[in-house]
Length: 126
Image (cartoon, rainbow, N blue to C red; front, side, top):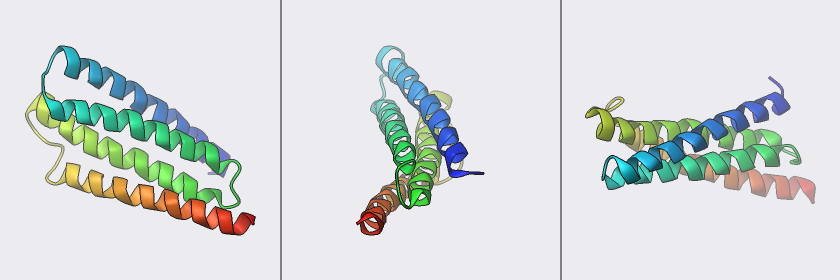
């Protein structure tokens, strides 16, 4: 898959996760008074937007793969984290043991990959 197609997939998925975050925030505000559901919604919205930005940046980067990897990892990780939190609150069960901590740890790693990608691009550019 080319970098452009990869970026478009990331952007499409990021849009879906942003929409899911808004819907989950509405559920948290109007149906289920559970703070962890609000956290899951915010994580979906914020990380969806960040992944969208990373994928857009890849188009102008001298090393686009790092940005695309960071964005893809972020999308996977936030789905895992927020999905597990939402499942616990709304379904009374988890996705699988340690899903939220694994997702959260992968989110941290995705931000570090994004940072490293920026540094590598800066060195390659200039």
